[in-house]
Length: 321
Image (cartoon, rainbow, N blue to C red; front, side):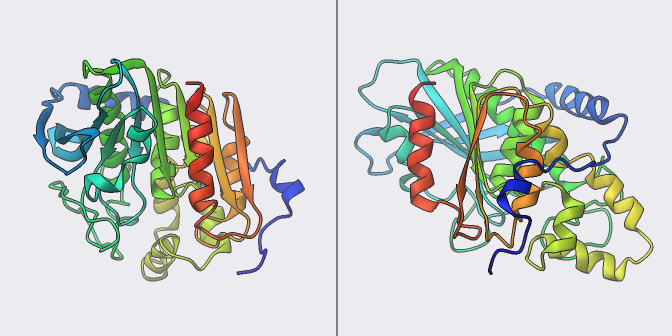
């Protein structure tokens, strides 16, 4: 994929008019209030993962509607506690994987909470262990993008974003974690989830948002043939009369609106040849982020963005947190 989106100088100024629901804040306030009625029900089981420098715990907590959500909590040994903590969210179709896949932050002296994504993790790149007991309420086009599109209340990502907000609460309530030094992080779908958490909470110390998905939906489906956004296109190709309903629901989950409420220091990244999460969709959110921010631009990369080089940027970002 060659450069197909706006030139970089235009991307840096790109601030499209993305319609926002009048009750956006009330919707999320009510959603999180309902979730808070459920105890976090945190269960931590120590396991031997063969990592002599890291204490590893198999985590379960109550997410949306009290549903059990899996994860890992990893604490570096031999470092004074309480520890700063990175809460990480996973990319599309991936799950929490195995503990030894998540050693960078503990090696840097940080606690690391990895949240499994409900219903995902079927693939061989990062397996998962959490189901989605909510199920679906209407026709879908595979994947998760179209589950519950008939209303914001039923949409799949309402549950995921709520799980993610509560994962931060899990970290904050652990006695080994410094509640004032929690950074949320993720790439692609994980980046979109991170954007949402950053917009829904004002108490995180930072947000690492790599090549974010779930952002500027209308623009994405109009300029890329890439999946997962194509799930929406294929859904609408069959459900021809539901365009207004679909984009009405998606407006409650658009990263552009969450970014407009984000106040924590943020590190973004973008690949200018990214045909999965097009650069203009990333900049549409980045340009609205309210807190201190910077974006790492990778001119010759697709959705992999900066890859291992961006991981180095993560370490620089957390170093002063």
